[in-house]
Length: 254
Ligand SMILES: O=C(O)CCC(=O)Nc1cc2ccccc2cn1
Ligand SMILES: [Mn+2]
Image 1 (cartoon, rainbow, N blue to C red):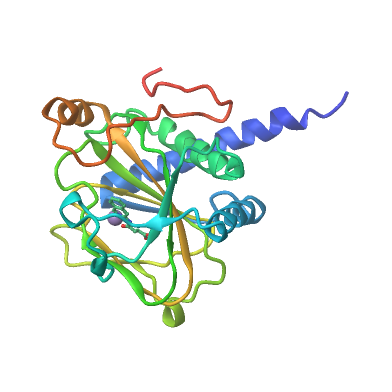
Image 2 (cartoon, helix red, strand yellow):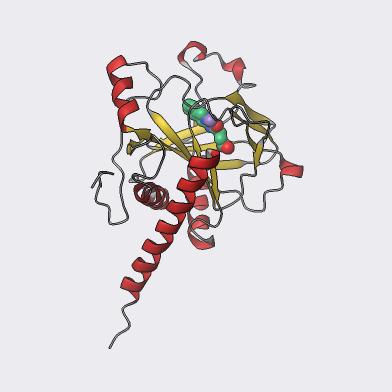
C-alpha cells in the first residue's frame, strides 16, 4: 500500500521534539542555559531569514525602547543599538516566523513538569531584532529583574557564516555565582534557552555586520499571576497561549 509519509514525518518530528525537550530541561535545570544547533534545518532557516530581511528592508523595525525612564532620549544608543518589531507570526509575510514560534512552543510544551520550579502557561509575541552592524551593542542587563512573570528567554539566530572574530556580536552570559562566562555566537539556525531572571545577566558585544535574532519569552503561571496582581510592570501584560504544530492553542497542563 501507499507508504504514508505524512504520518512518518510527524512521528519523527514528535520524537525529535521530545528528545530536544529532554535535553533542554537537563541543561536548564543544571546550567540555566541551553544551546540547540540546526533546530529547523537549512531550508526553513533560510525562509525565516528571508522574511526577516524583507521586514527590515520595508523599514518595519523601530529603535529598541529602553525602560520608560529613558524613553525618547535618543542619545542612549550606546546602551542598546538594536532595532526591533513584534509579530505574532500570523501577519502577511510572517508565516515562517509563525512556524518557528510553533516549533519553540512544541519543545516547551514537552518540557511540562520537568523544569525546576517552573510551569509555563504562555509567552510573549515574537520580538524580531536586528543589530545594524555599525558597532551597536546591548550593555549587560537582566531580562526580568523584577519578577514580571517571564521565566525562560528563547532566542533563534539567523546569521549565516557568522565569524565572531571579524563581526563581534557575541552574546555573553555571566551565570550568577559562577566564575564562568558563556560566549554564544549568533549562528544560523541556532536556538538558545536561558532563565530570564537575575541568574543570567548578559550582553551583546559590538556587532560589525547585520545581526538578526528572534526572541520569545515564556511566562511562569504563578509568577505571572503575582506580577499582574502586584502589577510590577515589565513587559506589556499580553500573554499568548502556546501553539503546537496543529495550530490548536494547547494549555501546558493538558
Ligand atoms: O540577541 C541576543 O543575543 C540577546 C539580545 C538581548 O538581550 N535582547 C533583549 C531585548 C529586550 C527588549 C525589550 C526588553 C528587554 C530586552 C532584553 N534583552
Ligand atoms: Mn536580554
